[in-house]
Length: 241
Image (cartoon, rainbow, N blue to C red; front, side, top):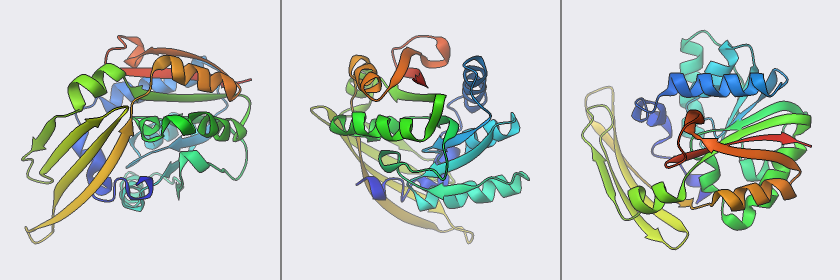
């Protein structure tokens, strides 16, 4: 399931999320990395089409983009080149993360950890820690329990956007949400190509996340999205001990 995630959405993910506050969100990441004293070289895991990778690069952080979706990475390469940025993008999975050398920071933004099963959290965080220098910074977020159970689970979402209309069915199954998505991407000749995929997101509690981080060798704190309320999204600011 993880290997096929974003096979349909990967090429248009950034476009479909254009209303998520990318600019403010990326500035938040930059400020947190700076305030935590992160060394200016790292990796953006689950980078999608690379918005945060590009923003970090422009801010002076030498950043590699990593994602599990070849389709997302293909779009990331094209967008970065179009903006005149020389960024390396690599295929990879955060649960098996292996960087060429230890790095100063790792980010995993916009629900990356929600794709990791509860049983794999400690192992995944340990993999992240093994790729960081001592004192290295790890910043990631999750969609909150409330958001996934009350807003996302057992709901249907749709868009008639001309470039990429989609329909998205969700079913809440205990501690996970099964997502069935159909997206129609616009071809150059004005026709549409239909693509279907299924995803699973896992519901994590803040307490479970913090416990797994501690076991993996991090000091960590959780805070609301952009430093605000925790109702929809929780950010975790972590340092490798």
